[in-house]
Length: 536
Image 1 (cartoon, rainbow, N blue to C red):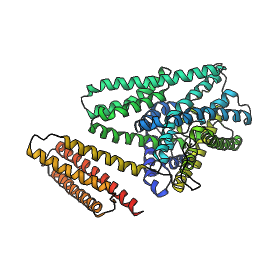
Image 2 (cartoon, helix red, strand yellow):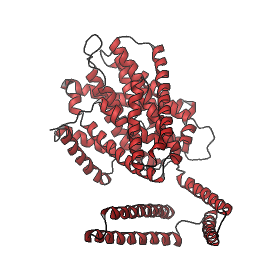
Image 3 (tube, rainbow, N blue to C red):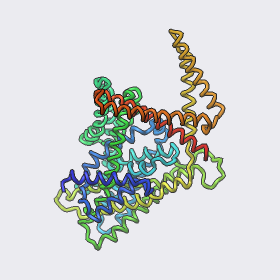
């Protein structure tokens, strides 16, 4: 079966799985990996080979860019000490501890090979963490730490991995050279991403506000940035991350509203497809991974993988419990045993799922060293990595959502939204009061709008509940707008079928109706959430 035919069938399976996801009540990454394992064992569809190049150069750049784009820079800076500790300190500590344990318990495992395995399994996966915790009531601080860690830890883990691979291939290793290389590669990646972002900022004016050209350019940038940084010997991961943050910071003034809407929808589709396919294909790798391993050795290696998975959990628990930076800085007023700090600690400690980057790094391990000798432990590293990924995804991934719902960490989003609405209302009123009217009609419009905003301010200041007659009136009004839009759409179709207007004109009006109904749907969703919160 040709590769393109495999991708078509796998994509169809992906759509079917997503359509039944809500009924099965499982996180999508776990469901997809499980489906991939079943497909690989039943051999209904021949497996697609997951090459390291596909992960590093095709899958990783857009996922990292999208995560960086949606990261709050002020929150990231505020939590940077904790993020750095997890993304750099914890990764190197995990690599070292796993290497020590692996060298001790697995026969004939050399020190360089032990460090390779440690570096491969050390970074939690960006996609798994964000996919599993998505739409869960996490405080903003926790979300920032988890997303920030997943953005940076791949870089430190891959640098440690490359140093260990060099030791295997060349037979020589130096801690001083490794430390120096880490600094050079990291700084180079940050510089490459910053320069490319700055150049794009200067060249952007030549797009002349063309939304399609802007979207296409932004889609290409992560791939080009990662490839260029890697060819220069820098960290492609850090280059893409800093590029995403740089463009996100400037996006409010850089892109038009139309471009931002178009990019948002386009990126949603890209990330949705990549996340789905990569986990499904990951589960289908089992036959290839066990092909070079004797069947008698598989049970022992599975036990090794489970043991390493448990060690990874304990290392993370230990670091978060012992490092002073994660201890609370202010006395807590809560009298309950599970204080807010303890809840955050539990969630952070249990959010260490491994994923596709670990498997890609294991797959990228060379078959031979410089002298032409076969690296015998390669298949062992690959299989243990796969077991660790499955262990963390299923054990931590299945229990993390239930754990979050059980301990109910305090989420401040609703209060923050009220404060933001209040700020925008106050500034809008001040703007209208300072506005100079050049006509009586203009002044009348300003006065009417000012009175409307002042009324909204009074409602917020007196703490009026959203669960009121006014809320239901607004909901009814929006629902009537939806019916009106639906009626206009039917009339639009009837006119098109009669041939009264050109298709171009029909499509333009259809886009306007779609945009209108999308906005109304969002307003109704917000009102429904307010009503449900008030009822609770």
